[in-house]
Image (cartoon, rainbow, N blue to C red; front, side, top):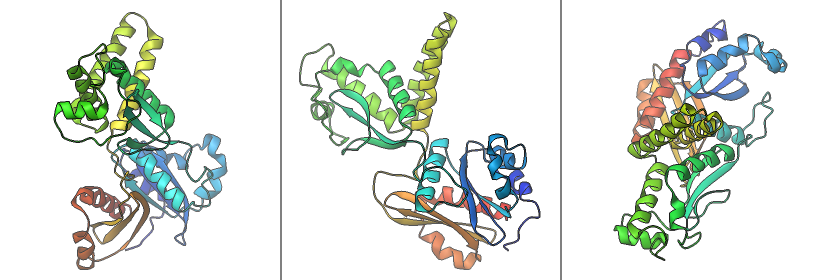
Length: 314
């Protein structure tokens, strides 16, 4: 089953065009390099073209015997998976810091509105990768949702996002602490709108995107291209934080995730809320069944898709 294609570049052509994480193995099975891509097919194929400023990788490319990959649901998820795997074990040809270049941050919705923080408190949203991207996303949220109207909220009170009445939610967030420029109902509405976006509610994210896109287009129409570019950056950052991302969670859960297809079993280890282990091996359907039965339903699609790709590459 574990048969290597004569030309690993042919494996690159079998990769999907979506985001994910890839790794290269040599003939002995040792991992040479691990990376992430917005387009797996294009990125991996590039190693057999003009390497440009990556010329130092030519010696590694000559040793590649097999390509392996995991398809992710977003570029953000791919960034997290690469980070987690490199923190667990860094292959010899990887030069970046173990934690990667991007900062790990959270978004806090509190008395002072929305802000990016580097150390989480209960009730914060995240984690996210990329301080600059997340700050741009927060800027877009503030642009459409004027949380500053409730500037008299109790400062920096991290409270659970409960499902209580509007009055209870307003009191928990401090939105009833003064008469200010907005009514309590206004403040509650703003809080709920921001929470819905940060909870990745599709309708809320779509509404915010539409509002930002309208501002961008209006600015471009009046030749305000600099402002339009700024709002476009906020739109892209919103997509980053609102996209599907399951490989790093705030809850420190431990579990094993398995997928199987055509004789290949793919195994993922989630430890303390982070998917940080990935392996695959030949396995019959009967032996794989007990592993598949223990895989949580929320992970079944991710694991199955990964196994199908592994089988296609092998």
